[in-house]
Length: 411
Image 1 (cartoon, rainbow, N blue to C red):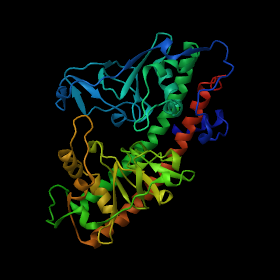
Image 2 (image 1 turned 30 degrees about the vertical axis):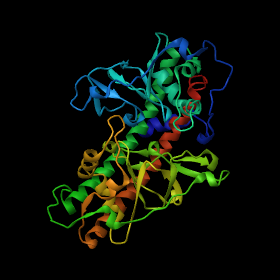
Image 3 (image 1 turned 90 degrees about the vertical axis):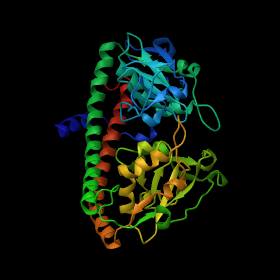
């Protein structure tokens, strides 16, 4: 079925350079029946507001509470906190947009929820399909991000959101566009599910070879991670203002598949203040912010000697510890629970590099670690093949998105 659907999509689009798609909403001759409107004229804009911190809880009292992009999933957000006294509320079918560091990322709300100041809820009027609005905003994430203001943390206000132009076809045309994009998105999600399954296979192999991480049934010596990793270096890209580099921030890591999906290409002059840590092939990146989300990944060859955010702890294994063994440990419930217990900050929980490096881990014989690494490499190869397939699915989806809002998709 997926192959037939994929062939259908390939036949209805031309070859497109996905990297070159417009970074702004361009003026065009609208198809018959389409209208150009400002977002504020056709949608209700609800800007989030943080409720008192003493109303946050993890016991599911009140409404699910979303604070920003960190809770976003592929389409819908996942709650990790609740609020007993919500101030600003989003409704099912609202598009949730991150309006503070980063700006522009979107998810769909599928529940009534409380939103903090890092989010806005965009609610379409009765002449707009809610998924048409969602896909429009998703397609224009890069443009909306460019509207963000602020030197340290970019943000976008209601007045700017309200002025964004949107070209709206009649409702029947909106629904045709949505139906096509939903099918393309389903293909993309299927690929991601296969990658997630590969990760579960690696976890099962690990469990069979080493037992539960938390219980350490083989009674191997417990040692802090810092004893088995090298010191890493920093570099300020701004010292080479015209030189480009690849930047890995928290948003670049897909915490479901544990891969670096979207590094950003920047000039040194564009480097954010947190772009400081040098990464090497094989390094393990562990996000220090919201450790419950477990955003971890291994640096691939193409990102060797590039830069990541100071929001990561960079673990570079010595020869006495296999990186694949350590990486699997960083994905474990034992490791995540340890960091969550050490995190500080109610609205933006985080841990320090030293907390991660001082985490005790069991140290099995190096021969056993290497055996696992060999098996893990085979699993990783299969995962990489699926990731490349997923990239094609992503490009296909982006191409359809590009055509959807010009009238080309349904002419």
